[in-house]
Length: 162
Image (cartoon, rainbow, N blue to C red; front, side, top):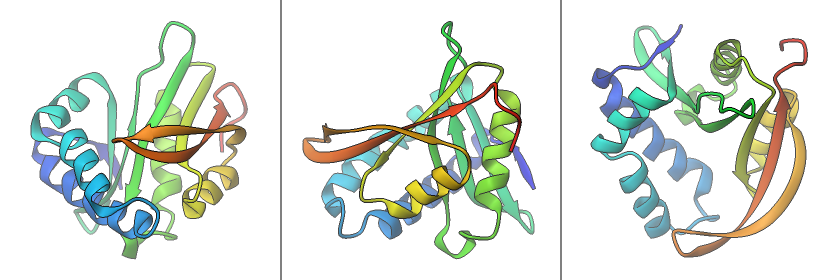
């Protein structure tokens, strides 16, 4: 089941983010850099702000949160961003990611959805490509002071649904 997130879900979202980041970025992004990012991005005040200003969706399995997706709302240019889509490792490849993405897309009435993914995160890149995102460019950026290669993708929100 996919549903809208609430303040009661903050601790579950935090747990999913930390678990999936550790699984996905082990050997790609140093643990202290991951922790610094997660501590800031998933702090309680930041999560409260996300719940108010963005679209937060949770995937549940037998009533327990197993993943989430976070989208910005569409801006005046018709653009939105998929900020995050994370699943507990044991629930990946079970259709929850696609359900989260499809649910989010159904709520976005705009032109384009962008997503940024670390270039070495091949699981993420394959997921986006398999779900209709088109590669735009790759660039280097500083992430918490650590240099990373980032891949930018775009999804045409005006195209027929998945």
